[in-house]
Length: 316
Image: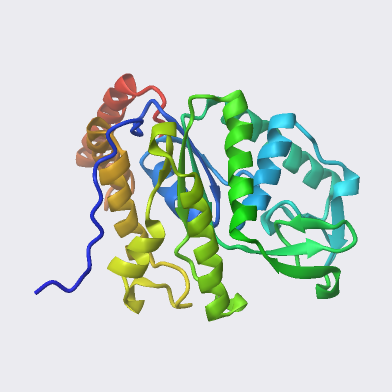
């Protein structure tokens, strides 16, 4: 008896990800979930330099500022709830020190600038089409940081607006990194605070816009994270207790699909070896000073050295 509707995915024949490629992930919290996987398996990767960014205009703003090295100053900051914040960045950057926030933001601008030039793959995960416009500055923000609601108006981006933003992101990056491959995906996280119907409209706009630009011949790809969650994992046991975010089991399941489609065969073998080393590093001995444990540590270090000789970019 078949209890699932399976999505048929084929191995990506070109531009596969391996231990020589550099991956930059930007977007919703699902980018961080997948970014954590890349980090665990020791790929060359970086995720969400400005923290979680839910919509394409926020990503476009980051890309534009990073490429132009348009640094932040005091005029870009707001003071709220006894902390300084920036409407372009996630609340994890919020701090009581104005100068520290400026330094942190500009450090990420520099880091992102460098990554955009060197990345071989950029994975963009879009979460929502709903955005908030800051009335006094007439700009669409990445995060409202709990500023008074009267300072913002909520808008739904149209398919054409999202398409235009994605095309702008591609053009900006390709201007400095012509050979980079783009991989788009839609976050399976449901934004029910917008409303159930509104969330469906939002995801539909994202999907339609992405498929307006996807072009395999031009190295613009789509990976169906959203569809895997909605169709293969259509059961609440695959969600966290909030019933909105994918559980770790679901993330692992989606990653396994991604692994099979996008990682080269050699990278798959190497990632399995990395996983065994990671598991062994977590081992807690009964007697740390025993000869058996010292032998275990010696063999572990030997295996790490052997792996690093082959892949110098792998660090534990």
